[in-house]
Image (cartoon, rainbow, N blue to C red; front, side, top):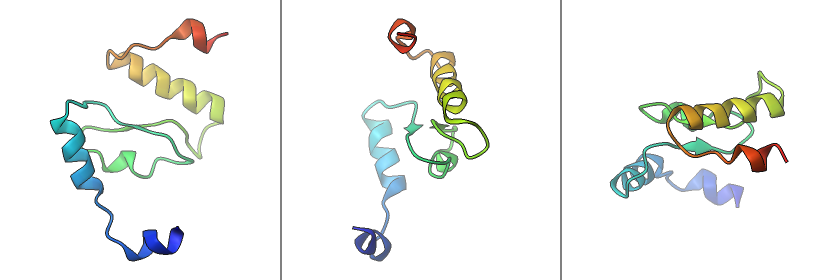
Length: 79
C-alpha cells in the first residue's frame, strides 16, 4: 500500500475540486496531525493535533464544525 502511495501521483487538489462541485463546504481531516487540512484554501478542520491531547483536539474540531453551522449531535457525544 505505502509503496503504491509513494510512487503514484496524489490527486488531492482534484479531489477537493470535485467535492466542492458536489456541494461540500467544510473538510474534516481525521488523522494523527493537521497535514492535508492545511492545504485546504478556506481552512480545513483537523480532528487531531500533535500539540493537544486527543479529547481536547477532537472537541475543538467539533466546535469548529458547529461554528460553521454544521449540526453536531451533542447529546450523543456526551453520552
